[in-house]
Amino acid sequence: MQAGGPRGGRSSLRRPGSACNVSGLPHLERQLRLLRAYALVTYPFACVPFLFLFFRDHGIGEGAYGEIVGAYYLAMFVAEVPTGILADRIGRKPMLVAGPLLLAAGFAVLVLFPHYGTFVAGEVLLGLGHAVLSGPPTVLLYETLREHGQQHRYLQEESRIAGLRMLGTGSAFLLGGVLARFGNATHDAYGLAIVATSVLCGGAALLALGLHERTAAGAAAPREFLRQLRGDLAKPAVVWLFGYWIVLFTLLRYPFHNYQPYLVAAGRSQPLLLDPLFLGVLFATLNLAAAPMSSQVPRLVATVGRRVLFWGMPLLLCGSLLVMAWERSAAADGADARLVWLGIGMFFVQQVPFGMHWALLYEFVNHRIGAAARTTVLSALSLGTRSCYALCNVLLFHTQERRGLPFTLALVGGVGVAATCTVLWLRPRGLLRGREPIA
Image 1 (cartoon, rainbow, N blue to C red):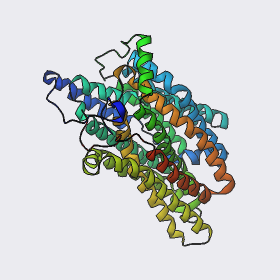
Image 2 (cartoon, one colour; image 1 turned 90 degrees about the vertical axis):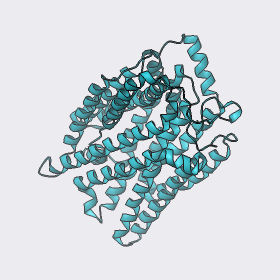
Image 3 (tube, rainbow, N blue to C red; image 1 turned 120 degrees about the horizontal axis):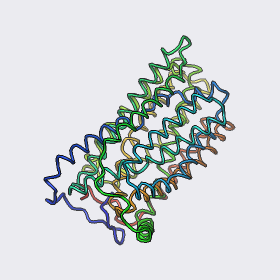
Image 4 (tube, helix red, strand yellow; image 1 turned 90 degrees about the horizontal axis):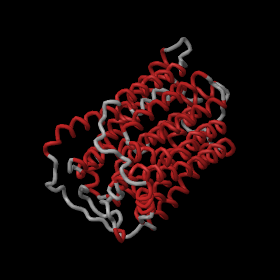
């Protein structure tokens, strides 16, 4: 990904300059420490490894599960741009407080009112919370660095923060496994893990109160704001990223939401896969595997360049889905039950692009758009991708219920290869050149 101002599809890459507000560096380092701490507790989802099991215990099948998850993405679709505009007008810090509070409320609804309708309502609140948080953390990081002439550090700092975010989420998964396994006599205290998640989200909101935002986000007049927003969204690089992001996001989110159904299917021959403590350890290990990949992004960019990484992320996901499809098909034909560990191994393969993608995509966007509409543009891109995936999620899980897991995994993997090749072939010339830090 390249720097901002890509007129004619090109970007100017340069090494970090000497422009730097030296006197403000102590403030910068304090703010970065707070942002790193916030990253650890942004998504403390102790209950996520068990949500499908929790829903299933309350009469939810795979088709209804797809609908419930679809409600989450639909809520994000509705809220993305309005919350992005709000963040650009009133500031990003208030959104970093409000987001975790909405998440805490959503999880509370799930556990207090366990029925299909309230599951949908809870997921809507979770979608709103995620919409609020989809842009402000990275924009606040970028603006903080820019104020001190340190924009060239963005990829390094964003990669570090993304790694800490995954470390915090992974630790929460492990906590959830312990709570679910030992929280009651039947070893299925999924509700307790949901309560813990809600409490931890509330803690994130308290931590956000200590963050500082020097500049008012809404300084631009409404007419000027809309003019800049339209200009940013019309840039060829941003338009292209929208198509790429749809493909990558679908390939990332479909297997993630399928981990639990996959494990339930495989657990018929391997009961260990349904043990809550094992699930907590597995999901924690997945996030811990992804975190180092995030921190390695600057080095990978310098070594192989952005073009290789943009090609590699979706194609690696497609390959892993095809392997999972083959394993489930072989299992249906009576293959050795131990083969399931190959499928679970693909979960870890999928953590490679998961750990890398946020830093790469955020760098791509932040260096191409103006400060006044930065959060709104991120929200608009997120709106498009999540709305497309919301429909895909419902269709895919209903297909999975009718045609089976192997067929649907193979379908997504095969279509994903074709979509990846198409969207990357259509990219503007020279768009992904460069291996150096962007200033």
